[in-house]
Amino acid sequence: MSNKPILVVGGGPAGLAAAHSLAAVGQKTVLVEKENRLGGAPILSGYAKLVPSGEWAKDAIGSMVTRVEKNKLITVKTGVSVSECKGKAGDFKVKFSEGRGASFSSIVMCTGFTHFDSINKPEWGFGTHEDVVTTTQVEQMISSGNGVRRPSNGDKPKRVAILLCVGSRDRQIGREWCSKICCTVSANLAMEIREELPDCHVYIYYMDIRTFGLLETKYYWKSQEEHKVKYIKARIAEVTSNGDKLIVKGEDTLVKRPITIPFDMVVHAVGMDPNVDNMLLSSIFDVDLETHGFIDRKDSYGELGATTRPGIYVAGSATGPETIDDSIAQGTAAAMSALASSNSKIAAE
Ligand SMILES: Cc1cc2nc3c(=O)[nH]c(=O)nc-3n(C[C@H](O)[C@H](O)[C@H](O)COP(=O)(O)OP(=O)(O)OC[C@H]3O[C@@H](n4cnc5c(N)ncnc54)[C@H](O)[C@@H]3O)c2cc1C
Ligand code: SF4
Image (cartoon, rainbow, N blue to C red; front, side, top):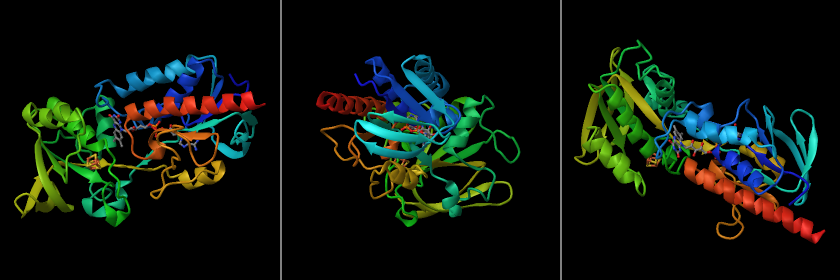
C-alpha cells in the first residue's frame, strides 16, 4: 500500500465508489468535491426514485455518502477544487483552491457531467413558457413531496407531454450522442405522474426508444400496459402557447401526418453534456478530451480508466453519458488501476 494518499476528484456516485474501494483495501484517500456536499447529480439535483432500483436517490446515494464520510482512511474536502497538478505518476504535486498543497501517488477523476441547458433548444419553449420544465425539475417536484404541479398556477396538470432526446442525438446543436438513461428515466417519471395523478394523460414523444437490456420490460412495456402511458413517434417542430395550454406541433413519423396537441405541461428529457469545466480540467490535469468534450479514455480493455496521462484515471459520466450503476462500476475499476499504478511505483523505488 502506498504511504502517499490517492486523490479522487469529484464526489458523485463514481467518486464515492472509487474512494470507498480504495479505503476498503486499506489505502489512504483524499476526496475533493467542488460543491459543499457530496453525492453528485442525484443529490445536488434532487433526483426522486432512481432507475432501475426504485430506491429514493437520497437514501441510495445518501448511504454511499455516509459510508465515505465515516471512513477514517478517507479525508473529505468539500467546497474545494484542484488548481494545479504537477509532477508525475507516483508523485503528483497538487494545489487546492483553498491554497493548500499535497503529494499523491495517483489520481482518479470522477468529475461528472453537466445537465443540458434547455435554453439551447428555444423552439421547444423552455425559458419562454413557464409550464415547460425539465425532467430534473419534475424529479425535484416529486422528491420534495410537493407533487407534480403546473408552475404557472400550481394546478394539477391533466395532460403532460414528455419530449425525449432534448440536447441529445441532435446534430443541429452539436450533440450527437445518446444520453443512454433518459428514455428509462422518462418512462419511470411518466408512471410516477400517472400514479400520483390517475386522471392525467401522459404522452411520450420519441424518435427511438432506448430502454436498453432488461429495462425494456420494466419501463417501456410496463408504462404502456399497466400505466396507460401513450407513446408518439414524432419529429417535434415547436412548442407554443395559446395563453392557457401549451401547443406541441410536429409530425407523427409513423403515419407521416402533422399533429398539433394541447398540453398543460411539457417536460424536456434533458441529456448529459460534458462537464462545463472540462477544458479547464483538461489543462490543469493535462489529460486529453475526446471529440465531444468528455474526458478521453486511453484504454478500454487493459488498464481500466486510464487517461492520456500516466497515473491519472477517469470514471463515470466524466467519460460520456453513463448510468449510476456503470459509474459506480467504473469508479471501482479506476480506483483499482490507480492503486496498481501506485504499488508499481513503490516496487520500482
Ligand atoms: C434527469 C436525469 C435523471 C437521471 N436519473 C438516473 C437514474 O434514475 N438512474 C441512473 O442510473 N442514472 C440516472 N441519471 C444519470 C446519473 O445522473 C449519472 O449516471 C451519475 O450522476 C453519474 O455519476 P458521476 O459520479 O459520474 O457524476 P456526477 O453525478 O456528475 O458527479 C460528479 C461530481 O464531481 C463534482 N465535480 C465536478 N467538477 C469538479 C472539480 N473540478 N473539482 C471537484 N469536484 C468536481 C461535481 O460537483 C459532482 O459532485 C440521470 C441523469 C439525468 C440527466
Ligand atoms: S436514452 Fe432515449 S431520450 Fe435519451 S438520448 Fe437516448 S434515445 Fe434519446
